Length: 604
Image 1: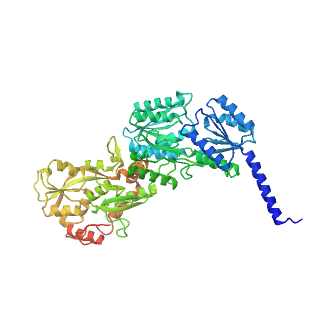
Image 2: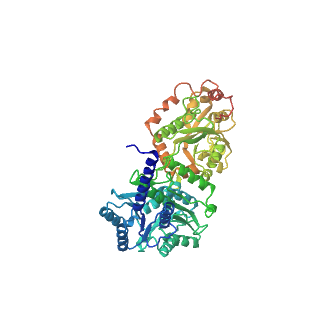
């Protein structure tokens, strides 16, 4: 039998309309809240708006009921099932046990759970990666806190609330590990933890008394009470779920958003047309399911540095460099790592610690310190990029965050304000220094004996603790970071004493007959110095755990066979010092090695 084309088309249209009518008649969504308050300007209100938007756009009806009483909640659920409502949205893990029993008893009804999942064939679930957005809020809070104490108010100890808490504190401590944390759960004192504004208010006051100056409240409408308490005290709060920045303008740092209305709308569309690919949806930053609220109400509280820090963290999460939750929403507590590190080195060679410029194709023996840095780089899997600058310029560059790290011979007080270095009990930690080295005293062989070297003009290396001690005593100093030059000054009687690293000085003197006959060592050691890798404050604030790991790795490398097995190459082959004219010949050799005229500064 052949159908006329028009007849066939009409048949198809009739069939489609019939199927659509059937589908629409069986698709009658409902939502059941396990709270008495639905218009909470937070979690429940967003969910309801999502259902309302779907119903309005699709021209269908919907039903909703709400009760915080478990028995009443159970009766409402039975009523919706008997009334043919399908699917039924059941948000909130507190009533998961009741929903599970109903889903097992009614396999033909579809349930959509929110913030928890049930492994049943007729249950679909929406989970949010709350940790990701809360982590961003923690970063902001770390920049704003003055007391270094942050508070958290949770409705009750359920997975979604714990995700907020753990993400918030982890984000803050990624910026500043010394930040302390305080937590209160309203369920400990309230029968209605998510809609008890008075309980939220009292919790806020209690955390304020415990020195917290920023409090994140994840407790539904109870959170408005917490925000009110903070605003009265002039402190800062953080809203949750919806944008609550306007609840107390100027006192809400931000709001951690869960875009529940959008998620519910998409879930209903997916259920209507059978588009669920997996029974569980995971919504994070990448899916635009969570985020932070930025608007005119909190703009005065957010500096450019805070914006940049949050943008960097968000980008790292999206790129997979920072993972704060896995597919189940549980914490992995992995800190992001830098893509590379820009390290500033002294512009003067310091054999055998720093010889020539690494990574330039020149001298393939960069020095023991560079060897140590390169070994640490390999172990950590993060490349180091080197640049030489004069010490003063390097300190300036690090203070302006134009570089990530700076190598110094020792720690001076001026560095406290511009850099971070490994400490133990508030003092520089020599166990995590990059290199240890001694200082000895050298004089001319014909200089008077029995004279305190501290009373004489002394040539000293730059940036050492001993040089600073001598300067405080009023000693006439010549600050010179080139050992060859310092020995030349001593040879020409420009100074009466030279302070030098004996490993280098003895080597230079021993290879020059002229210096051997002119200069003698008068003190085996007058003190020990420690070279440190300083980090910029921004770098440490961004990568605190990695920074500590870096210093620990350097201390391991410093004592490793892999490093010291390479030391012989600095004492073999072409000499650092050759010929009878000693210092002057060494200057020429150094200039040739650096491809520059004698006396010119090395630059990259």
